[in-house]
Length: 259
Image 1 (cartoon, rainbow, N blue to C red):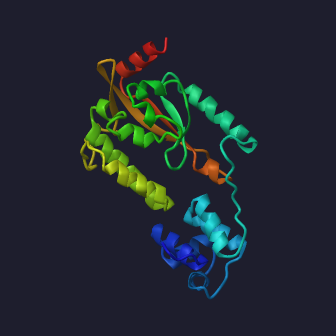
Image 2 (cartoon, one colour; image 1 turned 90 degrees about the vertical axis):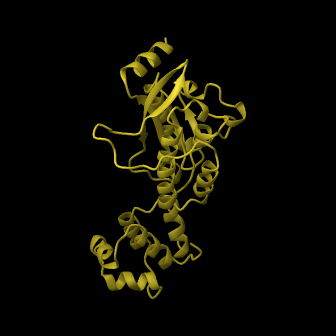
Image 3 (tube, rainbow, N blue to C red; image 1 turned 30 degrees about the horizontal axis):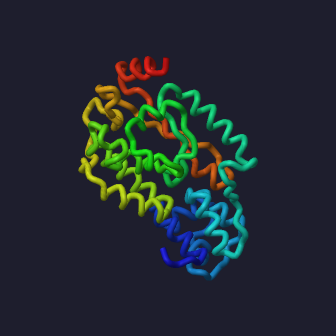
């Protein structure tokens, strides 16, 4: 979106959430008339009103700062670097979580899928990957779908690509991140086909990642964990992507490999 007024930004997020002015006004305990005045620029919202509307619209913290700036207010949410003292507690907690998933693979990623940390189980996924792809900063999705990455070992590559593309498309829509849009375009340029997601089979719960390891397939379930009630941009955009065994054979093999 090219516009940058506070009204335009709030209108964008209201439409993104598929809410009418009346619906949002009811949720935010204000009038549709006042909300209309804010969106058209006839009224300037207070800092408190922006925070209130942003909460009901579930606007990402990075974009809440943009809305505040557009209204003439200072940003409310800091963005400390991963390796600064402000992130010590989060970094320590995340590493405990990653270690707790061993021997199963788990990695910490930021909003753009750049890996910021990982446990030892990730080496199972990265075997045979071109070293250039895992040099920092390593993008987890690029590594997974690149022809010189994991793609050659993924047995359900077309299905997995379809799952990744659907998820990344939605993430780009929600966050309005140009980096994610560019990443999606890059990933689509890689070979491997794509299976469009359809209605699941009666006994299907999730789309597994089926990857070859030591001459046999590992079937893994992907689980995403995020921090509740984040109060800065860095924490809000962090996630742990963990891979758990989808069957008994995968569990036995991963457990045996760790001994």
